[in-house]
Image 1 (cartoon, rainbow, N blue to C red):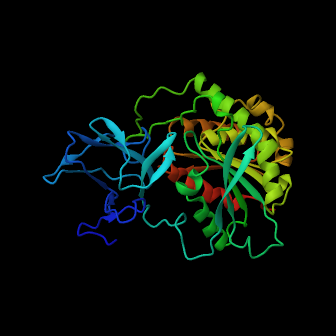
Image 2: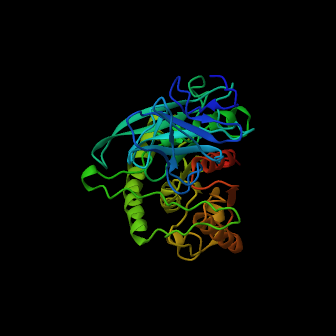
Image 3: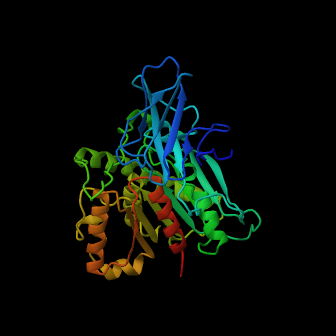
Length: 395
């Protein structure tokens, strides 16, 4: 679809043929909904750290019964949103839907000028396969999404390292491929020779049977810093949230160790040793990655935490069951320990900076990456994966 006279174009996240939402050259976003019988319509960004800004945004009714609003310039990246029609939250029929906030919800893709590392390009592409399996741990059918690199089927003699990549709270196994475009990030890095071909396994981080599933852990919501560096007031997550994270992580750890890793090694052409196995996750998934990876260094040599850490505070002597107490032993055992945060994530960024400084002071070898200007959102994690993947399974 061509750009309009004002230079705006339909968002890449729109359903086929939909003209709205539209992205303007200055990254303002125009939303439109036909609702002639509505009394009030608003655009509600998904969370207080959403790159669309602080909503809700009031839409204006036109003579034809359509409602329209143009937001201020958005932060580039993918952003969840919903429409409030007379106070009822509904999905935008013009937008594709994505699993976030424990439901299917609308999303808008705001392109970052000059950045295409997560776009589909004219390079060889891998496949994202839906792998269904019956779990003994949960007594349920489960689905993992498995990325296989471009030459997987044409080189049947080749075996590959594996990255286990976890989503955040309220999301699922589809999120890294759909919202995060992880397959395109990997395709482009592999094609350029920057990353080694690898298998990536994306499973759902909620693992206990439905009958006893604890309440979903809400994604920590740090507020984006306002102009001048002043953040809005926010109540930080409390111990109840950490306890839910621990419960969820406990259950997923059993599933990962007892079922997922053995299943992947038995089904795909992996290199089934710790040197060629890594685990990473964002937000809630970072808690799982640290818990599982650092707790099972016999299985994982590479561990990455994206926008998260030992939530509730970091103490070098006690964190992660004391794995950092002996820096020399840690450095000898762990091939890659990677930490990342967006500079606009407020308290999470502060947490990770503190963790980085403590590790650095103790001589614990690690990588710390900052995503400039982004908050607790997918542009942060796309950048994280783009930095992390080339470092994996090297020398």
